[in-house]
Image (tube, rainbow, N blue to C red; front, side, top):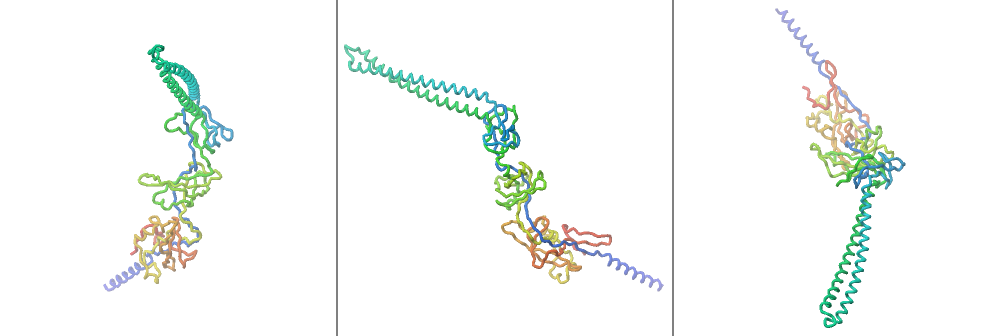
Length: 444
């Protein structure tokens, strides 16, 4: 019996020692992933998309209705078409002018008739004045003789009436003369209008430039209405382009005139274009409760590589800091989750981070620093460096971020220093990398 008891005790001791050995050797060990601090250039930007537009565009329309009969010739002697270079007053198209020629000829005839009416009115006036002179002489003789035996009363009254009638006839003739002269002015205005409409049948370019859109074909009928129909779109200078950029209201406060801009276009692969902010339009638009403003970016296009209406991927330059210390953003988000990971002499000041601290340090939710170029601000941050099997905190000043790296400033930090960006936990069954983006639960 005693022998059995001793055997059971020995078996329990062996089992306990084996369990303790297994627990001690299966406990996960923690390693650290590190990245070196680097010197580099940091460019903080705001991204947006826009459309390439000619800087100045003239929309050429028609003021008369009719059928497009022919097109003119461009500066190279070819028929006007897309991308045709044109000079000022270059003939672009001819509209059928037969109706307007008839209107002009009618107006000319009306003017000649008005002139003839003036001549007739002038002759009638002269005739009326002659009759007035005759009646005046007769009336003067009648006044000298007076009514009596030599001049009957009836004849006396007749001479008086003839004189008054002659005066009235002269006034009528003069009125007719004025009316005839006014009809000349009216007929001349109608002729001028008819000739102007006839001239509108020849569509000419008001400026020197390049045709970027031809909106009519030969044989097409142009119908004039309250809004002049658009026939041609002419860009004055394709070496000066603009990009109309839709900027979210959350970013519009960071945009200012003369701000540097870089952009690329999928239609021009491998080339980066440079420009400057011109102005911000005040007529905002709202789409699905998102307010955007249109920002004009001016860019030179000396080689004509930029084509109108290309889609541009814009980068508004906020801060450009060359030759600064940079660390990966993950290094500023990582904290040890257990005080045992911290070097013994630094444990008294260590406080495990809360979830709110992790959220606050996350650049996806809050930028590393406000990125207004006028007043750059720095905030305090913590990096962790390896100290044998432990980690040690290093206080730094955190600057702007480009979304991948963040600028830091510290007197005792040098290029090449390895900073912790994550953990590697060694389990019995293999290696597990801890994700620094997820909340890190404290191990028990």
